[in-house]
Image (cartoon, rainbow, N blue to C red):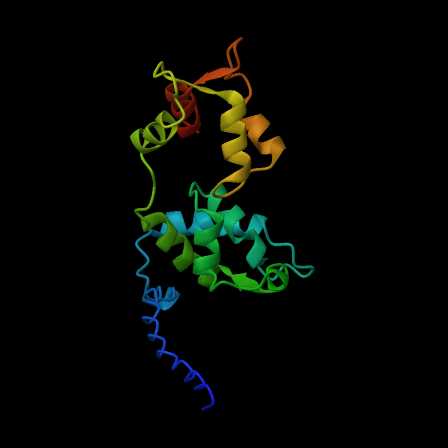
Amino acid sequence: MAPKKPEPKKEEPKPTPPPVPVAPKEPEFDPKSITIEYNGEQIEDFKEAFMLFDRTPTGENKISYAQCGEVMRALGQNPTNAEVMKVLGRPKAEEMNVKMMDFETFLPILQHVSKSKDRGTMEDFIEGLRVFDKEGNGTVMGAELRHVLATLGEKMSENEVELLMAGHEDANGCINYEAFVKHIMSG
C-alpha cells in the first residue's frame, strides 16, 4: 500500500483588517463667510500698509500669496506658516509667488487670523520649556533650545535662532526660560 499523501493544509482566511479611521476633514476657509468688524479708519490703515507691499509693475494694489503672512505680521498679527497656508487654500509652492490677491480678498483673511484663538499664553510657553529644565532651577541649556527651535515644529534657521537667543545665555550656556519667554512675548 502506498503511503498516504498528506492533505494540503487549508489556509485559514485572513481576518479583514479594520478600516483605517479617516480624520475628519478640516472645513475649508471661506472668506465670504467672515464678517468684517474693523472700523473705517482701521481699514484705511490696513489698506495703506497693504499697498506698501504691492510689487506689481503697474501698481495694481495686489500682493502675492507669498507676501500674505508678511503683511499680516506687519499689521500686528502673528500667524504660523501653517495658518497662512490654510487661509490661502493650501496653494502649491510654485503658486505662492505667482498667485495674487487684492485688498478686498486680504481683509477677510486678516479678520479671520485676528480672531483666531489658537494663540499660546506666556504660561503655555513657560510650561513647554519647563520640560527641558532638567535641574528644576528655571533654566534650560542654550544648545538644547537651539536644537529644538531649529528642528521641531515650524523650524527656524540658525540665523533666526541666534537673533532670538542673543544676550540670553549665561556664562554656563543656560537660559532663564521665564525671562526669555517674557522678552519674546513683549515683542
